[in-house]
Image 1: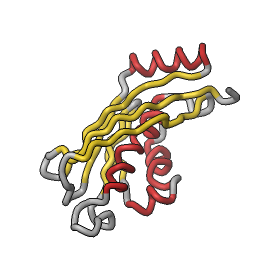
Image 2: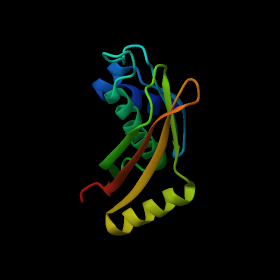
Image 3: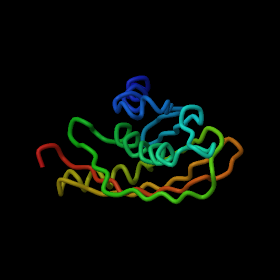
Length: 147
């Protein structure tokens, strides 16, 4: 796993994400930590734009996918995304998610056998003061190529 390649994929592949300034802070097998900068992502009332927070909550699914699964064999699909905004963000915001080795193995085995498998990622979006500004839950599916 080439960390710089993964960083490049997550930060620049989607033009909107690239324009937002999202940065990969840490990445490993089944693990990603990201930061959305406040600068450039504000709204009309001086807080972080809800769409920027939603983007920050959505991208970890792709990060977990590219670090945990064989991209030559599988591709990801976002089935649903839920976000609960808890309080206004006035600073940079981070999110961190990890999928265990056991869960990666379960998902891979199921996708090998059935052609697809689902999993859920839950995350807290945290501002620079340590406050939870949003909570996220997404359901992802990996599918075998050609299915």
